[in-house]
Image (cartoon, rainbow, N blue to C red):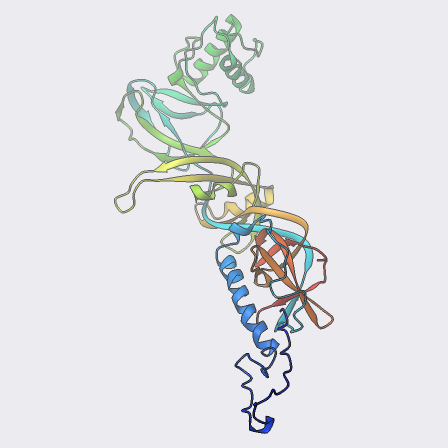
Length: 399
């Protein structure tokens, strides 16, 4: 704090009463004879409470407003040195700062995909919920003919017959080859040899051996599937577009919903920690991020959410999680990470009078205020940089 100027001494003038008859100076009046400054400790504590209040507010709001803040001035709000020690201190440390956010999630196989009828017909066979279906097996039957699961990312969108060319042809031929059918070249051309292999395949399925593949005869999925729900009944007459069933992949996955404002937490490829019901934590990777609108349910209005799918890493993690299908879990998303940075407790931050933030450095029984730039906030600590700050430097803390 800036010292007050000492009061000047005055000699008695003509007509002034003798010194013994003059009233004693009031030490609080601020005039001649007053104490040149109030007790420094009391002033210091009042200043510290005012400054620390800003840091408390900053901590309560997560520090988002201060992240990366550049200070506008470098003046000491109370002088270059205060001389009065704070009630407590903490050390500046160097290390890795990780900001995580936790979200409730569900353990399962990821979001479900719908399988709708592509043609008119009667459902003559349906799977049970939870059934596993692999390549070449019937997902369901329509008019006593199978709708077969094949692997691929491109949905069936047209009839395939001799003369057709394209990536969908190559996708079909790869499946035929994987199922053991030969005599054709796997390429993007639907040849007569391809048609012959298709007829053999259709005959083995018990379907009409036409050598032509209609869109309603196959469903393409990235891999094996698990039937999540069956939305129709055997014997139902369906029209194109009617929902038949939904399915998921077979890999263990965690699905979480975040508010749109928290979209930054989930980046494809980002690492995440998944806490299982037994308390174990396994590692995962964000595999899918999509924005969905949840319809109103009578009590809650329609809302937009960010749906995040986390795939577990490693066979051991997947095995551990498989015992808790559809159980509630917690996912820790990494919102930010800073390595090899200096940090202090958030409570050590002081709001400087001229703007910005600082810390009170304690050295050899004296203190000084050092302006700092703040970075990532996490776990009650904040990344800081400032003149002369090093690991081990002691900074003031509130009681």
